[in-house]
Length: 477
Image 1 (cartoon, one colour):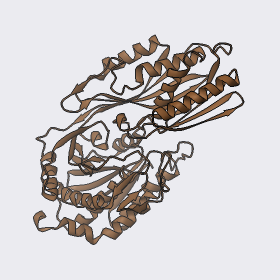
Image 2 (cartoon, helix red, strand yellow):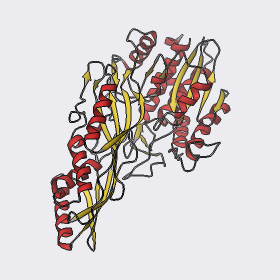
Image 3 (cartoon, rainbow, N blue to C red):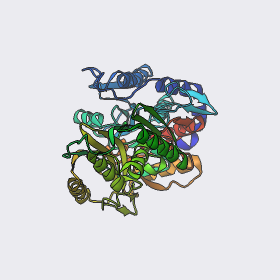
Image 4 (cartoon, one colour):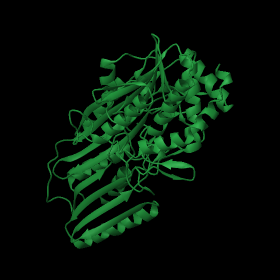
């Protein structure tokens, strides 16, 4: 039956609806808002609005829907004892700075929809939704129930998935449209932790300059695109000298930044390039760049507490995203190298410094010895290590029937070989016993997730919808 259906044609019949609904979905600012949380909207109004947008849409289109405690939900149709899961998320990372257009306007330019969440993961969620809708509207017989599971906290702590699977059944098989095509069958482990400076009382009379504040980054899984620092100098001459050095540093390193002097106080601002924390080298970490300036230009004039912080950051994270300086570098053939993203960097003269880190480790790596090494290094430099979370690696064997079906669908629709790949990113696929990430980013397309001017190509949105529709039918028939 599948080879008699022109999936692309079915998608093109609904092209305007798909684009319209994708834009409407993207126009909801669904960023985690703990301060605005309520009992009915536990992650804030925006995320609650986005979840209800999809559930209401599903209900209006004749699916059965369920809101699971405001932390997750699902849209379902079909019959059978087995369950096919399509795992999506409605939350997005903060928009960051420097967008060409409003990050929630979902403006269309040059055949692309620009918005936070366009590629991660609202655009793909709408593609998968319409894929389900097409299979349902064609009246195709399926032997499994098909369920889109909607998470709300994928970009932070995965509270949604934890809550959902405490109350709802685990799909037999499934996929997450939240990464790359062809098929991702291996995902690295993700270890989040914070290193916090301890001891070393501030001595106001030591050093000719006091680092009053340094701040960079919003999330551990994003490369910071902005860093700011405040430095109090003893004399105006020393402030002018630092200003000159900073301006020269910006010029020498082709950076964007600014410096303001108010009496003897300097305000430094430096811009970087944001990127997904799974591959920090795709961005330019504004926090580490500003720290590098402090280390190379002010180490002999800063107060001892600031010196210790700046030196530690530079020694173990400056220019090193592979854990070599920490002594924990590792790689395997399945999933590649261990990576570390310095997602947040903060310092105040009263409280000292904090470093927020997002470590992604290969599927064959035992993380426990690495954790111990990190703690030992930290303690030796007067830092404590606080573990936040550790999501274990995920791997589905290449001979699994799920893999074979998705390979067949991808190759039929694209004419390209469906290679299996591994990523550093963590998708909801890892919450299933048999789940993989499947699109939406096609080979050769730039990965703009978590970056300013994030977008999805309309052509790719439609192409992915067709692939997902056939995949759903083949897996559920």
